[in-house]
Every structure is written in C-alpha cells, then in structure tokens.
Image 1 (cartoon, each protein chain N blue to C red):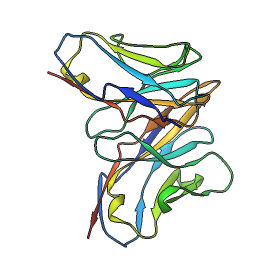
Image 2 (image 1 turned 120 degrees about the vertical axis):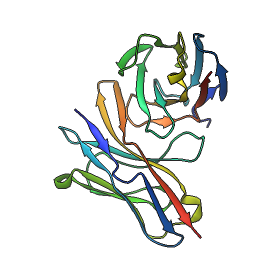
Image 3 (image 1 turned 60 degrees about the vertical axis):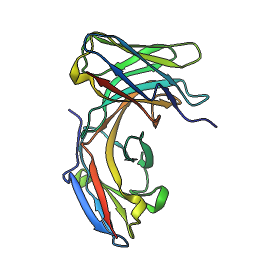
Image 4 (image 1 turned 30 degrees about the horizontal axis):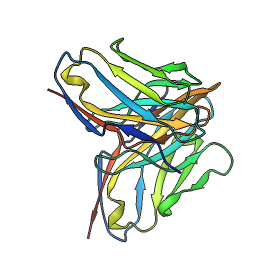
Length: 115
Length: 111
C-alpha cells in the first residue's frame, strides 16, 4: 500500500540557518511527489513537485527537494530560513490513473523559526 | 484568475445534523477532490470527481457523499454528523485529476 512518512513532527531552526525536512514514501511504481505548505487555518500551497527527470527540483520561496529512489526519500531543503517560513509542511505521493487520482499525505512537520 | 473557492469558511453543527459544503474549482479545471484534515494530521482523501463522475473514493462511511455539477463545481454532504467529523474540509481542483490546487477549506465544528 502507498504511504508517506515524515519522521519529524516538529522542527525548530534559527532564522538564517539551513533547513532539511525529511520525507519517505512507499509506492510500487515511479512516484509523483509533492511538498505543500500550510499556514495556520489555511489551505495547502504547492511548493514543488517531482514527476520525472532531474531528481533535484526547484520550487517557490527558495525551496528545493531531491528525489532519491534508492532511499525512497524526497527531502525538502532551504539554504536560509526566514521567519515567514514558519508553517506546517506536508509531503505527498500522487496516485494517478485515467482522469482520476488522489494524494496520500504524510502527517506533516511543523516548522518553528527562532529569531 | 480566481483560485479554488470554498463556502462557507466556518460552520458549527450539532450531532446528528446534516451539512453541505461547496467548492468552485479553478476555471478550466474539470476535476474536483475532497479531503478531510483532522487537527494535527495530514489531509485524508474522501472523493474525486471528473466530468461529473466519481473517479475515486477514500475509506469514509456512506454518511459522506458528493456530487459534481455541469459547471464543475462540487458539493460534499455529510449526514448524521458525529463529533469526530469535526475537521478542516479541503477542496482541490486539477485539470484532469493530477496536480492539485487547494482552496482555503471549510472549518466544520460538530458540538
């Protein structure tokens, strides 16, 4: 069965420090992978996606993620965190079929940023 | 262009009541999906519709139902509400059922 694991429930980093959020997935075929960000009480905003090709993908707000098939991972990184990055981050795997599909989400990682 | 719009933004219902949530997709998107997000968890897939037909259903009881209209908007209905149905309900649209763009959600509180 498909699943997504985000091992870290809560991470705190200092403003200006680098960030890496971990994501591991379980999926039988080539995965479609996503990272979303959610501010309190808000919907989800797509940060980046991986469908195929280059395993290092760039997203909005200076985020990037690297797909590693051998490790079944899709970790999110940012070289320098800003206070406005504090939010909940969700990794998801897409299960798509003809004109249909769904996203399977991890439990999320809450990011706090220290001044 | 307008994004995905959901209404209402908040509502409070009593146990046993019924509720209808509404979603308008991004213009040109023909697929709408619904997700339930309980506090502290990731969203869980409920339904996906494409061209007014149900294309996918998650592991939710029959109290949950949905439909999609000719203009591609959608409604999610929940009958016989339970306290455990309290959650943020998210609607997402996509051109054909792939990459999803989410609305701001409807916060449902069941008392």
